[in-house]
Image (cartoon, rainbow, N blue to C red):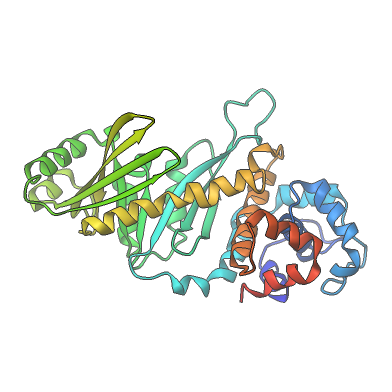
Length: 364
């Protein structure tokens, strides 16, 4: 627990000097509450009151447990970037396990319940960098004004990308993003679609021209009445094409043809990628497959296990800060080596103090 307390001391406190509750203690209780399944500020306060004797093992709590209004006020005004950076410092040692070529997936997620009255069509959004191989959040940022592409560029600026492969969907396949990734020492694998029409056209031509002689790799999955076969291929980009498009670091194009058979129907989908590293077809399949863990391993868990889309916190920095706490709570829960699903581990942490402490210890 002392590791987290030390990390929270790095979060600036914008409140007046005469406040009653210490910021570190407020953040510590908020995080532990989310780790044990709390979904809003009222539940954070209830968690604190219920666990008062346990919390006093680590915290002074001279004025008792903060009220739900105190939790709300603090989370509305502190800087989400500073809060996320405090957690990033805790996980820095874990990131050394990310091997060369490890995938860092970047994707945005709407906080569907976090919208102002009458503006359900425009909920808040968070963008996250996720180490797919480690199943660990590296950094997350609130998207301002719906500008997900701009937020992704700011997110890349926070990361050490040396030796790693950044994956992203077609929204982020543009020159500024390619330059940002390669400048930070990383490589990219971007989905290529119609927003880069000229580049996509040349990619299709290059892949078609080399169809007969380029190596391929095939994988397949079958189950639950559905089967899918994926065939990947990669072709190097000529210097002429790279210079013509002025796309930083472009070295190759890749394609994956997915054939799905569902209840007797067959569907075929071809996805094309811009690459700054000449991957083998097998490596392209692994990289693209790893990218989707940000959907299945992070976003799905946030909604199903922590009920993120049902949350109505919506004022000021509140949605972003609670979203940061959720993502980092999943990091801690995933490090726990005990048996059981994430949902069970989170409930067990709320029931059993020793289980909670064991979770926290495994972040060392």
